[in-house]
Amino acid sequence: MAEKPWDGRFSEKTDRSVELFTSSIDIDKRLYAHDIDGSIAHCRMLGRQGIIAEEEADTLIQGLGVIKREIQRGRFEFDHALEDIHMHIETRLFQEVGKTAQKLHTARSRNDQVALDTRLYVREQTQAVIDLLVALQRVLVRLAEKHIDAIMPGYTHLQRAQPILLSHHLMAYTEMFRRDECRFSDSLKRTDVLPLGSAALAGTTYPIDRLFVAEQLHFREVSANSIDAVSDRDFVLEFLSNAAICMVHLSRLSEELVMWSSMEFGFIEISDAFATGSSIMPQKKNPDVAELVRGKTGRVFGAMIAVFTLMKSLPLAYNRDMQEDKPQLFDACDTLKACLSIMARMLPAIRFRKERMREAATRGFLNATDFADYLTAKGMAFREAHGCAGKAVAYALSQNRELDELSLEELKSISSLIGEDIYEVLKPERMIERRLSVGGTSFRNVLAAINEAQGRLGMQPDEPAMEANTSTKAAGSSAAHEETGKG
Ligand code: ARG
Image 1 (cartoon, rainbow, N blue to C red):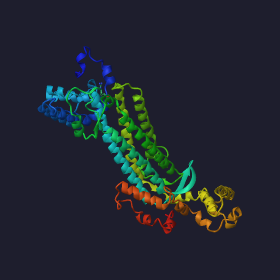
Image 2 (spheres, rainbow, N blue to C red):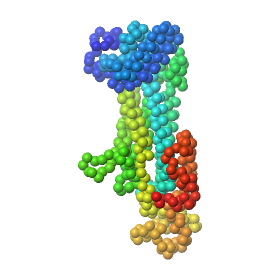
Image 3 (spheres, rainbow, N blue to C red):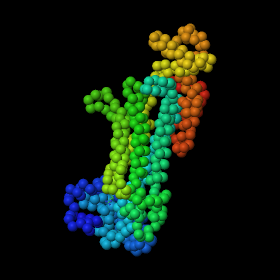
Image 4 (tube, rainbow, N blue to C red):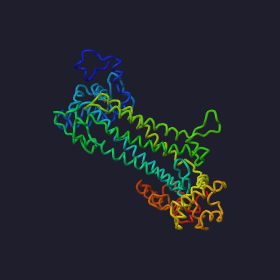
C-alpha cells in the first residue's frame, strides 16, 4: 500500500473502505495535464525566487514532463490509496527524481492546487464550448441563407399564427446561441483568475511571486483574497448555468426537429445518416439524435443543481464536499459539447420540404391579422377591423374555405371597404414583405440579419452551401418573392 504524503501524524493505516470512499482519482485523473502544467509553473517560480535551488526546480520540471508523457501513453498506474491526481503525481515524482520531489509542494496546498486545476480546465473547456457555439451559429446562418425564400407558418401556442420565413426562424436560434456565446465569454473573464499562492487558505510565508505564475499560465489576474480563492467555485456554477441555458436552447431546437419530422408536420426530413430505425416497425425512421439532445438536457440541469446544492451553506474556506463538483462538471461539459457538435453536423443534412411548409402557411387563416390591418389602412379602427376579420373567418370556416378563397361579393358583404386589392394583401409573400419593423420577418430584415451574422462570425461570402446566393440577392425584390415556395 502506498504511503500517504499526509500520514505523519497518523499511527493507524486508513481503512480500505475509507480510501475507496474518499478517493477521487477515477474522476480527477482527467486533470493530470492541468495539474502538471500548474506544478511546472509553480516550480519555475520557486526556483526563480530562490525558495528552492534552480537545479532542483529543473529536476522537478523534467520529472513532471516524464510523468505527463507516461499518463498520456496510458503507462501510469493509478491507486485509490493515493486519493487524487495531485498525490499520484507527487508520489510518482518521488520515484522518478527522489527526495527533491518533496520540495514540490513548498508554499502550496492541495486546496489552491485543485482550485487552479479546475480553473484551468473550465477555462480550456469554456473556449472549446465557445468554438462549438460559433460553429453551430455558422451552420444556422448558412441554412438561413440557403433557404432564405422558404415560407412557413409561425406559431404561438403551437397554433398557426402568421406566415414567417424559415430563415427568420433559424436566425432566432442563431440569436440564442449568440447569447450563449456571450455568456460563456463573459464568465471566462471571472474564470481566468489565478488562485495558486493562496495555499491552504491564509496565504504563505514564502516570498512567492504570484504574478510570475499567472504570466506562466496565461491568467489575466491573480485572486485578491486567499480565503475566497480556495472556497470559490462560482466559475463552476457559472459554467454549469450557462451550459443549462444553452441546453434549453438545444432542447427547443430538438423538439422542433422532432415535431417537424413527424408525418403530422412533414416539414423536414432528417437524413438517414442522422436517424435510426425501429427493431419492430420496418417503416420507422426516428429522430433519435434530436430526442437524445432533448433528453440529455435534464442531465446538465441535474449537474447544475447538484453543484448549487453542494456549494450552498458551505462555511469558508475549503471543504472536502467540493470534491463532488468534478463529476458533475465533467459530465455536463462532455454532454454539452457532444450535443453542440452533433447538432452542427445534423442540421446541414436536413431536407426542408418547402412546398409543405408554404402550403401549411396558406391553411388556417394565418392572414386574418393582415385582413384586419387592411381594413385599418382603409380607415376602420383596429378593434372594429379585428371584429370584421373574425366574422370573415367564421364565415369562411362555415364554407370550409380560406379568406382569400371568398369572392369579392362575399367579402364586400362583410365590409364595403374591401376591394379587389385585398387578394394581393393576403398572400403569404406580401404579408412577410410588409413586416419591416426592426426584427420582423421581412426578407430585407432577415437578409440584413444574415449579413450581420456572417460578418460577426467571420464567414467567407463564398463558403459552401450558398447555392441560394442568387435568389438571396434578388430576394429584396417582389419578383423573387413570387418564386418563393414554388420549389
Ligand atoms: N481531491 C480534492 C478535491 O477535489 C483535492 C483537495 C483536497 N484537499 C484536502 N485538503 N483534502 O477537492
